[in-house]
Length: 196
Image (cartoon, rainbow, N blue to C red):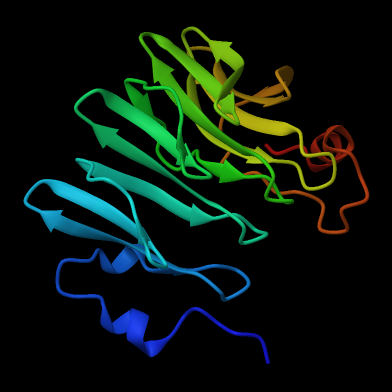
């Protein structure tokens, strides 16, 4: 039997100051993480025995699929940034709600960040794509080829893009669904699914 880190002792460290919805156990069951109120207006993230500095807000906390790292969006007096593999990324005006995603292999992250008036899709803290006059509603990695799929909203409608290439415009897209057989490219699947 492997030595597991998630124990009753660790869980007993929680008190009334932790955010109940933030408690996560890594996919392989070896790590426990949670967000807690350190003192008024200051939150911290604790993963196993490591604790982050204090932040005004901590959102979108998640473990990578391979359980080797975690990511979260944090707000400080300077603005918002994403922490991934214990490294903070660039500071932005805002990190898009529910846009922080891990690649299926756990080796990359992507998120939407507002930089002034420009929305950027960041991959591993580097700008991959930038958009003027568009809101980024949803991001995900395609399962097989790990391309970035994005749903964007402009005055013309809702657009689907894969790795920065426009696919189609729709009245509404509620979610991205990928081929569970994982044997088609993202372009083939989007073309067959229609998503409208």
